[in-house]
Image 1 (cartoon, one colour):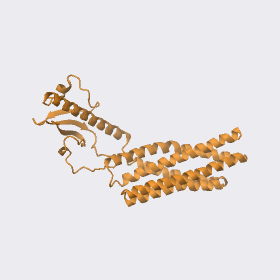
Image 2 (cartoon, one colour):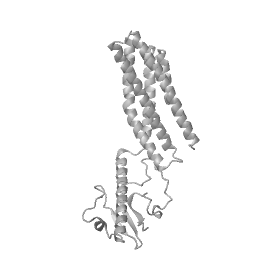
Image 3 (cartoon, one colour):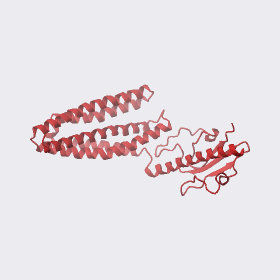
Image 4 (cartoon, helix red, strand yellow):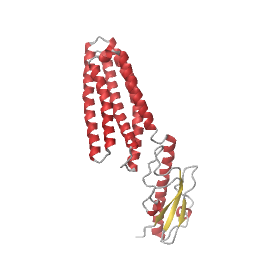
Length: 301
């Protein structure tokens, strides 16, 4: 293999790697979108996991799919200009290898989809995910099957049309998926909300410790911590509040939140709106937007 052939071989290999990374994470993104469109039987954790899948999938596709298009364009230009039979032979080996990998990916994804059905996933979601796997992987399989036959080399304009159609479909799904998850500004505020919950949980532990040592609740956070309070809300949020409710050890911790704990961007997944959050004292940390107080009881055992 001469240096010229080696260069083309690496370009072809890079093209295929970029392709299958794009396809794998595009499937991940699409599955996340399907889960958000049909949220029945999903916990809030499942919803957040679907959003994370969309973010990861979007980033990977945004980077690797354009890379694939560029590398594939370079590969095809080199193939049309090259008379090196060893290079063409190696390229065909890689193409057939990609068909094998594509077939294995298709089978693996179908196994995952069937497992979801057996675990109680909605029939609609099962059908959509199965179609997703067949369409996405099948499109790549079809492209390289025809490529191995020299179809696209002889019909350059058709290869452009195929690339334009697939790119348009991917772009539509990417934009649709982004519309179903919180934008970065909302995510930032939601992360701050979660940090505040973590702070309040730490304060709860410190109150428990104070009570065990003094057999009484502190009168204020200043008494609990002295002059230095280790946990403070971020700038722009009001200070945390502590209030004793009765002598039996019941108290409340308050903070001001930007969003409900069940808020989910443009898709509000409300699973607990019929529950009085304050009925379960020590273990419930769900909240509504605005100032919200968590009622707690000291564990006296």
